[in-house]
Structure formats: C-alpha cells, structure tokens
Image (tube, rainbow, N blue to C red):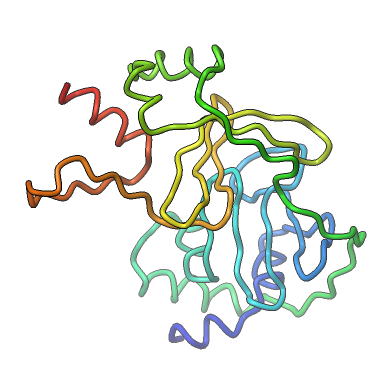
Length: 207
C-alpha cells in the first residue's frame, strides 16, 4: 500500500474498524467522542468532504496518515502504511446514521481580553511561569461551546487565530497557524518550540 491508496480509505470507515461511531452530524462534519481518551462530549471532528480530522482536545489533526500515526503511536510512515493495509482487510463501508444538527461555530461569543484571571495565573505559576512573562505575549479567551462558558489562556498566531489552554484542556481557535515572536532581529538566531508553554518556560529560564 502507498500513501495515495491509504488516503482513498474513508476516515469514517477507518474509525469504524476500531469500533468508533459518530454521535452527531453538523453540516459536512461528523463528530466523535475522541478515540484517544474517555470523554462525555464529542470533540473529535471528521470533515466528510475533505477527509480530514481534528481533535480539539489534542489540538491536532490531519489526514488518515496522521490519524494512524496517533493510533499506532509511531512516526514511521512505512509501518503506518503496513498497519493500515492490515486493517483494510476487515474494513467495511459504513453509512453515517447519526442525528443531524445545524452547524454552528465551535467557539461562540468569543472575547479576547488582557490576561488577568486568577485561576489562569495560578495555573501558570504552577508551571513555573510568572505573570509578567505570560502577560507580555498571552491574552485571555472567554467563549461558549455547547452551551457552556469557558475561559483559557490564549496565545496568538500570525493569522489571527489562537492556541488556547487551561488546566483541563488545550485547543485551537481557527485559523490555525504558527506564532512568531521577534525579540532581537539583529541576532540571526531562531528558536523553534512545539507549544507556547514550552516557549514561556524558555522565556522564564533566560531571564
């Protein structure tokens, strides 16, 4: 099996092979309870037209290859393709038959304000990140999702979106993109971090 052959497998069929069924459909997307953890509300989305997935709890997404990497816990593409090939022998086309719900934004009533919430600041302190360092680059996001109100630390990216995080979850407010902080243009040195908490920890360490 090659990559293109793997991508011809529908994500809903692939997930069904592991016993995962969608719980609701919104527009062109179906939502699952995440295959990576136990949860009460669905936070794993599959776009039926684009054949792409996104897990709002992990803050990760992609195609069937990236999904298989997460499921099989490997970055070895050759191994992933072998695993998908083995799985394909038992896959059957499934019909999506879950309740349909009118699509709505994942994050409603979004407000971005200066970082000041004591609970969020306490969480940062537990991670050894002081308030002064965090407030220089982070904001505070308030939003409604599935009828419930939430707040989180918000780290802006270059396209106007945010990586958001609090003690209990992390996600992304679209559009997803990289973040860039220019501290000293003349230095010629570039540091790359996997997540913004890693960046904040680094900023604290060099003070």
